[in-house]
Length: 606
Image 1 (cartoon, rainbow, N blue to C red):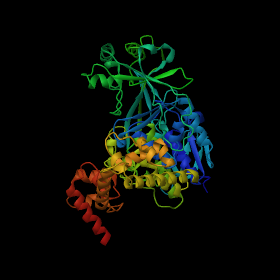
Image 2 (cartoon, rainbow, N blue to C red; image 1 turned 120 degrees about the horizontal axis):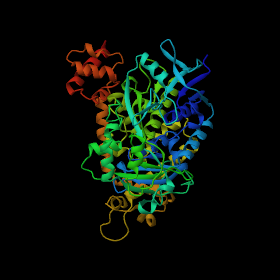
Image 3 (spheres, rainbow, N blue to C red; image 1 turned 45 degrees about the vertical axis):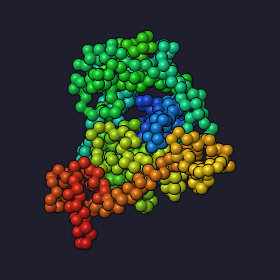
Image 4 (cartoon, one colour; image 1 turned 60 degrees about the vertical axis):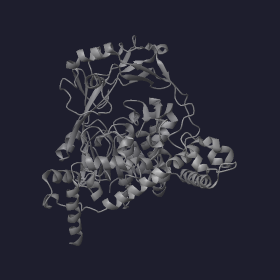
């Protein structure tokens, strides 16, 4: 009998969410990490959220995750991005105190009943009857478990690059999981080679702050978690803005031959939406300058993170180019920037439960599945935790629709389409994003967390009370009219007008809940987007009906007459579970979908 129900490999953002979720479901869980003090570490930018990413964090909170609460407790600079646009594309973001965030996450993990943190390095899987049965540790020890969740981040076969220097490691000062990467390859797991990077760190006392543009956070910030009170917890800090110059670009061009990106030392593909300084100079030569945000690392930290200055140029070149930026003429570098090249698993090899098809009981989550960012990693960790827990308890899989959550969009994109570069969440990836604004996350998702017992009863009750209050207010707004004589619009019709401020309705509504700003914004969002959302719901139902046909897991695509070789290869790689999922695979044509529907119907009659 295995001592553990589940073992989670890796203590990053994905691993913490997965391990905590499994333990909250009453399963005895081991979290294996190289160093306990590195749990929840922010390897790159000490921030949480953003456009698309902030939606994921709110959804995580609605489902019982920890990232939103940890961000609220440790945030030093909160801001709502795209505040002038509609709620569908707004994004909560905060700058966190890096060390405080890690300590907070570690505290939440270690306080979870049934969860034990073990220090060690995993070298491979234990298999029994073709199923995952635990892990093998470097040095020969084993940990037996009924399920394994791998959240190895950027550590598989990892190599760091600074100019001509090449050092094994997935993060500065840490190791590379070479043995585990080789084990997976020897098992026949298809791997990708990806790349990420991080900028240098600057000493705050060496920056001429008085010459820079100052950026304050929101004066009355909105938390990620509606359960965060009091809020904010920490004193708030300002960020500052500078820009690269013509001298910066000239220095980069003069040293491109020494950049591992352009010298051919790096084969891995990096995130297109977070380019290095070298890529910016080469790909956007018409831009005279590029923004660099100077973000504090923490209240007590002497480090400053220059967001937008990611580079792997040689150390002496980094020293020189930093000083070409206004305000940084005398800057001292505490740490140099570097690139990390690492192995990731092709996500088309996992099911929609994030379980490896070839080895049942083996789940993968986070950057090891080809994503980039703390938020995407945490979301996949929670999803894997939900599904591993349900499988161990003999329950149906945890699934959400694309019109129900950004989490579902993330998972479906990965397992259906795969990746050619590290995947980053954007609101534009969700075809039904009008239904997925941050205000409605709890309405959409909290019932799942409550049913699985991972959302505390008090939080679930608070969500129900809030939703009931919003519905009550909406009914009143639709029924009551503005005071006065003549043709008077309903309060809802008035609020739907561009620029209408819901706070102006406070004297007309004796509703205590409406006095809370987040409730007023929620109500305003519902009123202003009502017609658009109803059309979105109808379209989502139509798509769901058309794509609901199940495809057998063992369907032999190569035996279906009329399918091209390319379509067969793509379907075989992705193994879609429904016709709708097959339709989202690039290259699968309407004619191919007709053939699939006929083949599935034939299997059903057989």
